[in-house]
Image (cartoon, rainbow, N blue to C red; front, side, top):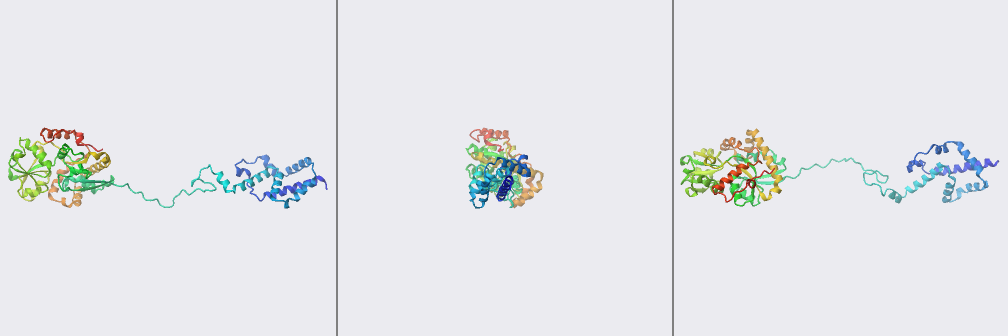
Amino acid sequence: MPMALRRRILVCGALSLVLIVGSAYPTQPLYAQQGAGAPTIEESSVDASPSSADESAANEEQASSGDDTSATDDIEATPDTPVEEVDKQDSTIATTPRQRAIKQSSQTTSSNEDPASIEEAYQNHPSGPGVDTPTLPAAPSVVMTPPDPVLPPPLTQLELVLDWHPSPRHAALLIADALGLFAQHGLDVTMRPPADPDIPAKLVAASRVELALTDQVTLHQLVDEGKPLVRVATLVELPLTALVAREESGIDSALSLIDQRVGYSDQAGHDIILRAILDEEHLNLSHVDARDVHFSIISAMSEGRIDAIVAGARFSLPRQLADLGVATHVLPLEELGFPIHDGLVMVANVNHLASQRSAINRLVAAVQEATQWIVAHPDEAWQIMVKQQPTMDSAANAEAWPDIRRRLALRPGAVDVARYRRLEHYLWEHGLVDSLTPPETLARDPG
């Protein structure tokens, strides 16, 4: 057999052996695993053209100078040799680009199976449920269960002490509560009547409650006494207090009060108002028989224990007494020389105003909304109030409702600075306060 033919047979056998060994490894191209580019046309032509194998064989035949029996011995010994030697033989025989790619692919595959090498390979890469890697698949981003309900923020608790039993003067507060306006502004307001008409503002000064209702006259008196109080809202912007006298007493002016039994229900009525109207006629408390009737205004007047009363119920008291057979007439304070003032104000402790400003501001906003609603729906507002407070459902309150409604403050937070200055100067000039207090100390707009 010619030598060239024998060599060609040996070379073809060697190539067949390499292909058999390479078939046991993944045949994925090298550029797909290692990120290399696609094989070039020159590399692809190595496998596709049969003539290239012939040319390689011819070149190998020309370059070969050794004995052909040694190659034959190596090939025949391959089945019995160890795996390590086979690998060496493979690396020796695999001289084409495709063979080298198959060899490198097998080495890469075997190294990827090592857990340590996988951890090292991804050590400096991002990790977590949002990173899609072979070792940690991406977690689903869609939540299949319904979300928890969103809870509203907790309500701010406020306690408010009224100046008297619930009446039409408290309409803005009662309607705000009934319409849920307090809750809409994040407030839970507790309102309660006082045990004594003199204590509401004093409870605020003592930090026992957050807010209280009183009149502007009482505010000036308590601030002059050193109480840490400040007005934060006005509910009724015109006076409610008047001198209500029995018709048979003949009282028709401050001068006719001499030697009369005059009642009062709170300290400001005695110390400020009664003294002021007497002083207009150059009189003093020694000229009258002043009596404290507390809450018993109606019984004291109907039973004849007093001849007149300084009270803050100028619109309802005459009808209540008339229903009991007692004829009366009303002498408004402004007709007796007393300045116009706020009939019903809300006071807070000035030492806690900074921490309570947000809650008070929301409360004033709710009161303003309620007042505007009352103006637009006066009849509905009355029905809501008597349903909420059955004790208000009386002929006297129903008759007083239109007059009180017209005096409700449409802007509760606004301060009439001139009004507070005038009243303070009036009280100081009549010796009813010891020093002048600036209006900004007496009243503030919480907004």
